[in-house]
Image 1 (tube, one colour):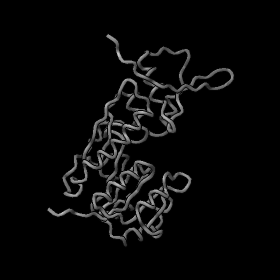
Image 2 (tube, helix red, strand yellow; image 1 turned 60 degrees about the horizontal axis):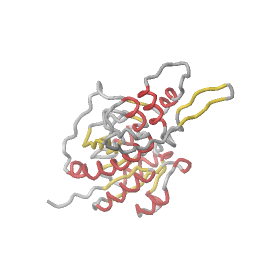
Image 3 (cartoon, rainbow, N blue to C red; image 1 turned 90 degrees about the horizontal axis):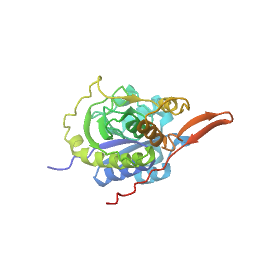
Image 4 (spheres, rainbow, N blue to C red; image 1 turned 180 degrees about the vertical axis):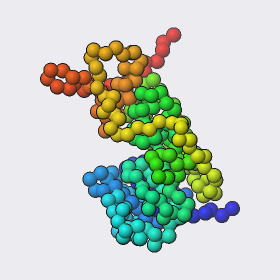
Length: 259
């Protein structure tokens, strides 16, 4: 069977997006346009632009996505599909409808668990399944049907930072494993709205303060401290003193058992 080449509008930011962009191009896919974060939030913008090989008129910023001129320009490209890789901007319905084959998103969480932001933090705190998911986007936060998932194990020594690194590797893995299902339009698995969890950026602040007069189960406190050790998304947990907040972040190391 001949390879089906997809014309892709690529939405991406950061090193994982760059690696996935290289993966798609290495698989023969055609990047028809590139959408990046705005300058102040952009990571590896020059590298993504260089890798795409696209002229300036086919490179767009997130700020322009709601502008009629941008929507018209993308429509004229005649894309088959959109692909979002750790692109932290919600795509509105008027953008989603431009793509006959939909928009695929790679999410660093094991959907339906940990929809939204910071899955590496909440997987540890909540004890929920963790991994990476390739799914179709719809008008909701990470609620679209699932193409495929990859599970990741949480080690007792993982912090939010080390788990995030595992999830970033899993994002590339799940993309590679799901490409054939996308090309062949394999029917994805719908998510149940009654299952899973959702967290927003503001939720981290709600759990970051340690009450010095409260009783904590030791394991729960350790999980909280290691989960919140997840820069730059979280600088750690803190407690209050008369002179201000005292911040805590942890590093964990495994010492092998000696018989």
